[in-house]
Length: 361
Image 1 (cartoon, rainbow, N blue to C red):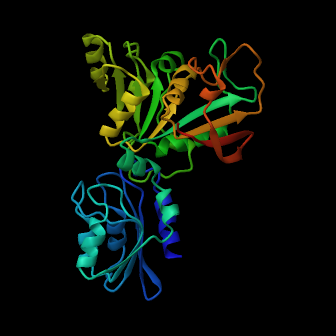
Image 2: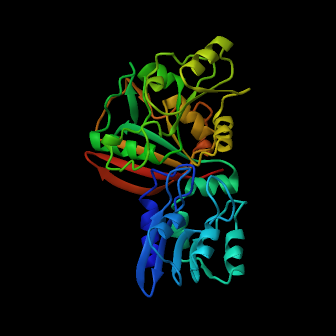
Image 3: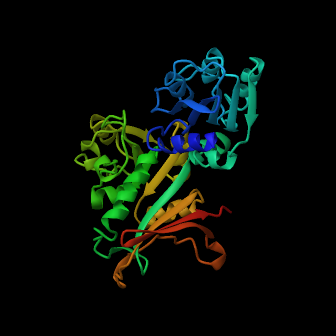
């Protein structure tokens, strides 16, 4: 019961933590909840500290935590030290922290201090809170969601590029929620030139509370631009929040002009899904959302780096003079097909959202 409450708390901050894992903590003494907390935005207190600060005295309490308390100093001091100082007598942990800097060390510190530790309560539910953090810590890369919107007959735009709006307002609201939980939103320069998107989270279009976030606390917006075509008057530069442009042949003056617009410019020998994802992993990004046209969407699927495919399907027939869902010229045999497993299908307004896990080769 108490761990389930901690998981609910962690879910409530999915859009706030980004670089940090989402964690919830409940403090219980004599059957009563005396403190509760969830991880705050990067630089802010972790769930255990929020919970301890919410009660005047935690002596003799049991702490229910969705992730192993940290034992190292990062932006904040170790949470295990705070729990030991607070004189809790037991810590119940859902899952071990996959971060090599922790990974059991926090549990050993607690045990060494004479605190009883129990592990594995609602482990799978707690692990599902942080797919990006878990994947980056174990596999070195962020978790990738590819978002697509299409008509019933599989079109993403008319041949002339017209695509606003295929889906309805409720589906677009859900896309805003998806952006809010992402550490980075990736698009291609073709989409920037054609559609001039902002790619930011518009909080007024969600039912989420931005809490302590500032207007500039946005997901990192990433443009894959091999040759340097991102225009200086792009909407991306006019909206508060970080922008990264990744290129391989942009000229020096173009790079400087982007930097003058506030963008972080990254030059790579090749701009591919794999190199971009590695760059974002080094930057500490846990979850990535790809919003792109058919060519770049196909490149991400072809690279085998998509973990979730999220398709918003509208009850709309657009005919044959249209653009396809994705462009995959290398897929010529049935054996090239990518297998998907349907995780969820739900109605969102007049549309349907289909979420698939992607089988990796």
